[in-house]
Image (cartoon, rainbow over all chains, first blue to last red; front, side):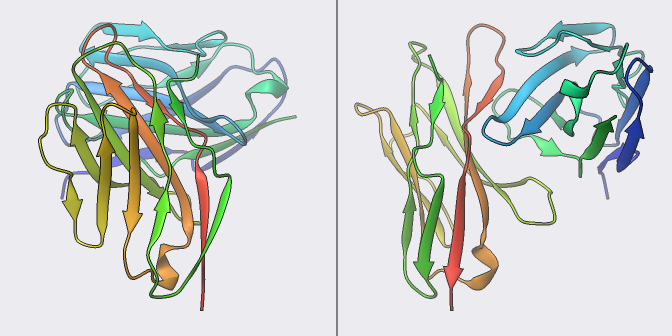
Length: 112
Length: 115
């Protein structure tokens, strides 16, 4: 069965370190998204991609970057982790803009 | 301005009863889609139901229905015959067709089903 997987499920890192969260989908979806979830804010869009070599900034993109070198993967990089980036991160994909998003199971990141 | 507003941080419902979770949205785009997701305590996001802005009828999926009132810009989720497994966070979301086509989420409603 097609799926979307995130790794790691949990990560603890120190302030200032570079961190990369992986997202891999086997749905062959063009559209991929990264969200962060924080209490009181729901899910907020960090970055998104509509296809290979396409990346776009979302609502809360400062301090994050993504790259899309193939259809399956959209890794999220925190250039220099900050405590404010402690959150749960969700990757999602969709085949088109009328379809619901398929979500990964999330990565809980703690920045100490 | 908030694109999606969910005014009920928490709701309680008796098992087997129906419950309505409120959602209002703000857009000037004539073409948009509305989604509801469920997030149980295990953390995954589960798609429940979709309503397109041009759909003439309210969407239904099993025990879930969407009470779509376009003029009021509301898209309330109705869960009939509540079950203990319905206890979860519920998020309303909207995607506009113009602009970046991003999916905007509300802050969620935590539903607790009481036995």
